[in-house]
Amino acid sequence: MRTHLAVRLALAGMTLGLTTVPAPAGAATPPLSHPRVVAHFDRPAGQAAESVVVEPDGSADVGLVLSRQIAHVSLDGRVEVLATMPLPADGGVNTPVVGTANVTGIERTSDGTLYFLYSAGDGGLTGLWKLPPGGGEPTRVAALPATSFANGLARDDRTGDFYITDSTRGKVWRVPAHGGTATVWADGPALAPTGFFGANGVKVHNGAVWVSNIDRGTILRIPLTVTGGAGRPQIKASGLDSVDDFAFTGRGDQLLAALNIPSEVVLVTPGRPARTVLDTRDGLQNTTSVAVTGTTAYVTSGALTTGGDANLLTARLTQPR
Image (cartoon, rainbow, N blue to C red; front, side, top):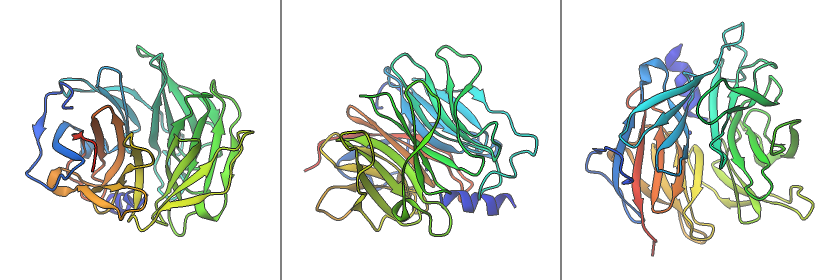
């Protein structure tokens, strides 16, 4: 049953002074180079890396999906668990589609507060949570329906609003900056699943909310209207096998996307075919998320179908030609 669950989940996610372990000689190609596995997670204990956000000092915070944890990866590569979410009374078996409670998307505000998503098939637990800086107990700041699988999380730095993808219901929810009532911001066929999960990764960029659809292999741009509503979705990339999370490189609308089942990161440049820039030879196993800060890309692998090495990898980002 565990193998079956892992397969279903996988169909759904520094050079900066870290102590690094070189990945095998691989396929890293410009604009990414010098890939390094900077941390390994305890995959047998359920520490499947699902999401990542970068701290100002270059360390990272990671959502560990099956172990229901938020962890910090220090500059020397140590993994410290910051919080473990409680199971509902039924053990999480009513969590939509996957049948087990999951911690997924993660974001950070400037004061060090970590916000993250928890889906447990329970109306008292599913929703947006926050963890105060310096430690403490997580608290829920916005509830979502028990039938939701809250997956990707993004914050609009201008307004402070949070955008949450709901993979089973094919929606994007919006939550006010300080929490409160979640409202449906966008829905429709382009966000819906075709058999498993629909809307997945999400970013706020260039006047729009961008969303990946893992079943459809697409990345959508949904414009933010002058009133803050959702404009008409536009497909900006397609043919991306089991696309999970993604991040913009800092060069216009160019982005790096995590492809889960192929265990790849691809470079998506407007007007050009997607190009693989990292793969299994660089240490990826069921790639789940990407974050970019400065000249470094951070990539998590969940090892959900491989059952192998769940890890955090970094690579040097250069300006592509």
